[in-house]
Length: 400
Image 1 (cartoon, one colour):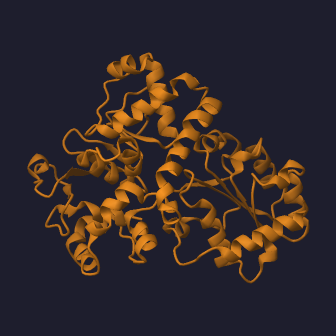
Image 2: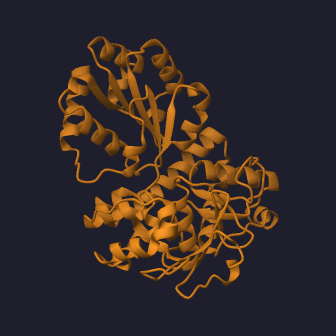
Image 3: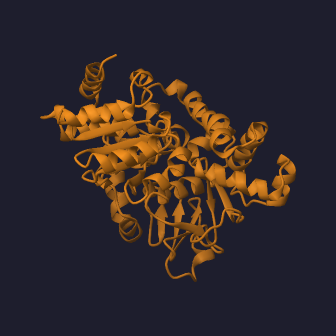
C-alpha cells in the first residue's frame, strides 16, 4: 500500500465529514501550537473533530495537510517516521495522527519529530487515557494536551434536535439564570429531552445506531478493564468482575460515600490495593472521586464521595433502577468538571472553584441547609425556571 493510498483515504474521509455540528472544544484549542494532544474516551468524537478542523481550515489547500489513523494497515510495512519524513519533504505542514496509542513507542517518536522537523505542526489523539497519561514525561514542555469530554446537554440538543444555543459561563448561569432559562424554555421544553440525555446522550454515537448504544458503551468499558488496566497498570485480570461489581455499587448508591474497609472486604482486596484500583478507575475516566481538598491529592488518599464519570454509565449498570438523586449529582459533577475544580462539601454537595457551594435536590428543595453559606445555590431537578438562588439543574448542561 502506497502513501498515495493514505492520501486518497484521507480525502474521502474529509469529503464525507459533516459540518452541521461541531463540538465546542474546537474553539478552545490553540490550533497554532506545534504539538497538540487531544485525549478522550472512545466515541466522544475526536476523529470527527480533527476532520472538521481540516475541512474548515485547509479546504483550499489539502496538499499541506494529512490525516491518518495509526491503526491503519499501512503501518504494518512502514514507520511513522517514514510517513512524517516523506510528508515534510513534499511540503506538508500539518499532520493529524489519530489513535496514536496503537503505535508502539509513539510518544518518543512524536518527541523526535517535534525536535527534528520544526516545520511540522502535529496534532494527535488517543482513546487510551492511560497511555496518554503515561506519555506525559516524553512530551512534557512540548505538547499542549486537551481532554475531550462527552456531549454536554447543550451539545446533545444540537445533535439530537438540531437546536443551536450558546454556551454560558458558570458566572452567568449563577447570576442570570432566570432570564437565561426563560429564553431557552420559550423555544423548547427541556424535559422532553433531558431524561434521554441522562440515559443515552453523552456519547455522540447515539445518533448513529441508537439500538446498539448500550453494547458500544459496554464494549468501551470492557476494553478499559480487561485490556488497558491489566496491560498498563498490571491489574490482576481476576479482579475485573469485582471492579464491575464496584462500578455497579457506585451507580446504585445515592451518593456513594465509600467505606474503604467494607469495600475491601466485599471485593477481596486489602485497603491499599483497593485505593490503588480506585485511582486506576479514576485515571481511566470511569469514576469521579471527590475529595475535601482538591489540591495535592495523594494516590492512597480516601475519596470522600465517588461518582461514575457520567450518567450513561449509571443506566448501563443499573438499567431502570437508577436513583434519580444520584443521577442528578453525577450529571452536575460531570458538567461542572469541564473547566471547573470540584471538591467535597461538608454542607451542600459540591464546592466549585474553592468558594461556590451547590446543593442538588428535587423541585421542592430549599436553601435551608446552606442558607448561612455566602456563595451558595440549589440546583433543582424537575423545574423549568429558577428563582433567586434556586437554579434549574438542566441549565448547568449549557456550560460547554
